[in-house]
Length: 360
Image 1 (cartoon, helix red, strand yellow):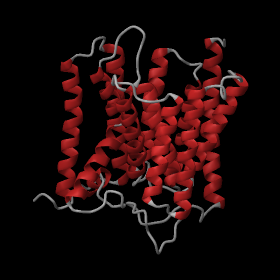
Image 2 (spheres, rainbow, N blue to C red; image 1 turned 45 degrees about the horizontal axis):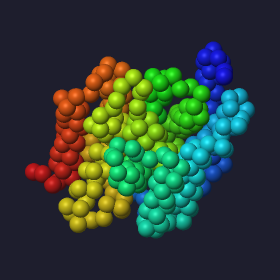
Image 3 (cartoon, rainbow, N blue to C red; image 1 turned 120 degrees about the horizontal axis):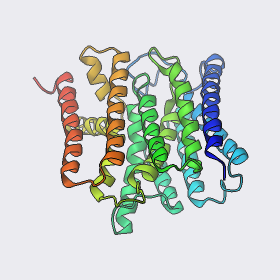
């Protein structure tokens, strides 16, 4: 067993090197791959807030840094615990499915049905490996909720990747929330810790180039990889959060992931409701997201990103409040936290309807 001093030295060093490595990789992609990942401009299947096409290859760096994290873990930590771990193998397989599907979508514009099939396959792979939500007494309900969660988060991360830095900021804050729980549980030897550290570093290195005005996009390669990665982490650390010293009520099991993923959940919910009410498909790109509604209020792209970052920080603070300072989660707590989410949903829904001309 490695000493705590060893962890405190190695992990910061690995993180700093990974940030630099991510920035270097994305800079090289930007330099030598000016057309890689850019779709035919005569067939704009992805509608972004900005009209300029840019290399959508940033997501490849996320995958590379994940593999680097596993290599470092195998060399410096537990070389025999990566591949004999059934749960982690399922996690890794699901990530590969998401990454390859996103890569194919960036290259060939895959059909929505195929994307949905792969997303469901990611959920089934996680379930088969033992990673699934365990809030109900009936397994079939847990399996159904797990698949719904995985498909929903993969699509929501993809959909909210519609403005510079937004999806990367949200992903950073979700990972930081998971790392916070790891620090609370003092579980530094877990392989997920270094995987989270590596992907976090890759996002920060990417964010330097993705901040408005962005020079590079993550593309579907990045958003689909992050979608399944974050959905899996959400199951492991938020849905199944269970400290030894207390019992977690079902209301807390729901509120933790909802708080952490509030921004993409609210955005996807509003977009789906608004488009269905207009008789349009929720699966076709558009400029009717919550980010766009804020921009239509007169905010710059930079300020929209800052506001989303601030809301994410507030949600991170609420997660700290729940896991550290509320020893017994009651019905009153559940009403307060769910009320906060519903108020935010209502405000953003009102803004979206008003700015898109649905309210006079």
